[in-house]
Structure formats: C-alpha cells, structure tokens
Amino acid sequence: MKYLMILAASLIGTQAFAAGETVEINPPAEGSISTEDALAAWDRIYEVASHPRCSNCHVGPSNLPMWSGPSYGKARPHGMNINAGESRVGAEFVQCSTCHAYREIATGDRLEHSAPQVAMDWRLAPVEAEWFGKSSVEVCNQLRNPELNGDRDYLAIASHLDHDLILHWAWNPGAGREPAPYSLQEHVNDVLAWGVGGMPCAND
Amino acid sequence: MKLTVNGTEHEVEVDPNMPLLWVLRDEIGLTGTKYGCGIAQCGACTVHVDGQAVRSCQVAIGDLNGDVTTIEGIGNPETLHAVQESWVEHQVAQCGYCQSGQIMQAASMLEFNPDPSDDVIDAVMSGNLCRCGTYPRIRAAVKTAAAKIREA
Image (cartoon, each protein chain N blue to C red):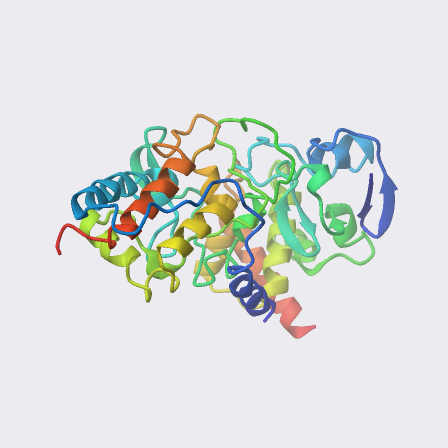
C-alpha cells in the first residue's frame, strides 16, 4: 500500500534535518562541571523536556499527540481524533502535514488555534522518546541511554537541538501558546554542562 | 508564480504568504473548495497536493510544492469519482457546504487504503466537520466507495 511507502520515506526522513547552525555549541572544559552543577543543569533540562511545547509530541505507543498546557486547560489528546500511527507522521490516517504544512516563509505569529508550522515535516518524536507525564528521573535515564536517545552522546544531542526546526518552534510557538522555558541557547548550554558533568541522574 | 491545478498550469501574481485556498477561489475562480474556519479546524478547504489531502487554507502559495487537485478535478459530471458516485447514492449531503472537503479527504484515504475499517474511517474523517451531522451517511458512502474502488 502507498502508505507503507510514505512510512518508509518518513523513517528515512528522520535523519534528514534541515540546516541549523542557530546556536553555539561550546561545551565547558572537561572536569569543570561538578555532579551537583550537572544535576542542576538537568533540572532545567527537565523543565524544558516536560513543558507542553515539547512533551505534547513526546508521547508513547498510543501515537496520540497531546493538547496540554496553559492555553488548553485540562490535558487531552489532540482534537479531531488525530492518531499519528506507528509511522508517527500520520501516514496510516491523516498525515500531520495535512494541517501542519511545510512553511518556509516566516509569517510571525500565526492565528490562535491554528496548526503550528515549520520548514520541516511535522511529526511525533520517536516512540522510545516517550516523555509525556514521566518524572525527571525517568526522562533523565531515557535521555542518557543511547538505545533510547537515537544513539546520541551529549554533543550529538546538542547538535540535534541545533538542527531540528520543530524543536526550535518550541521557543517561538506564537498563536497564544506559552514558549518552552529559558532559550534554545540556554537549553543547549545546559545539555552540554550536563554531558560534561557525566550525565548524572538523581537516582545515581 | 506558477501552479498546476487539475492538470492546468496557472500563473498568479500574489503575495507568497497568500493561502492556497485564496488563490484557488479568488485568483483562479475555482469556488468548489470552501472556506470554513481558516485555521485547519474544519476540513472544508481540503484539496490534494500530489495526492495527499491538505487543508488549502494552511498552505502558503509560496511554499506549495506539488500539483493541486480540487473537487472540480477529481471527477466530472460524466465520469464521477467513486466517492462522488457513492455520495449521490447515499444522498450524503444536507446543506452540502462541507462535502467537497469530505470527498477530497475520503478520496485521498482510499487511494492509500482501499479497505479501511470503521475505526480507520472515523480516525481519518474526524478532521472534517459536518454541522448537519451527516456522519453516518458519510461513513456508509465511504464504505461503498471503497468497495467500488476494490472492484474496479
């Protein structure tokens, strides 16, 4: 079936991020970050990871994106019965890009309640990156596990943040949505500090 | 800028931020595609871009990448598309405002999945609102259209 072809294309596409280079990736010197400082950096990272702008699409095998956060009131699955399917791009049902269209041209804030759009194909995060509703310790252990983080070390995580335009949207969501806390650069700096400090988690 | 709609190339001089829906209706004069909400909440403006259902109110013309098919191009009065045929057979429409979007969404689904279960039909068609509440007839027509496509 054609949707399997779309699925295959979408899986290949997960590696093809648009050009980034929007942030500086300057890790602190080796040995300069104490475990305490690294854990403090993690706490800030978790504020970002658990924020609705990020966690709403970091959902598990339900494949149901969430609508949660101050502008939604009570947390609920994405309206319109949306199911992104195992493809995580909606290939089996309604493709995410049916509404979250590719948008190259910056148009400033979009209308409230309109679909977020970036110059990438909209998608859920991979299923193994299920963060929604999970604790700081759970997400921490997931993010430092190469089997659950796309086989990335901390530098690769920082690079991923630099290149994935859907992630950039989290800090500039417009349309009455609350942005993720801190800034993309501060978040990348925290990832680098956490990494140089040995990627500690509170359960160590 | 140039775009191909229903196999015909058009050249329009508009702001690249103009939604595809505005171009179709106001610049090219194809008014079968309807404006409902303008924010991808209702599905009335659904067209195909290279076969994929898209909400034409959400696509900036400057970002359009592919050939457009509208309700005027999916079939014609002499040779209806299987979904259009089924729509008539089941007398789906009440007021009819949403039906071009419904038909385009259903036709796109059946292109990818010619044997959808009720759950799949509900999941796919839930983004297309019908304020007359003709949903039972929409589902029945989609199933009939699927059978026609499988037999073709």
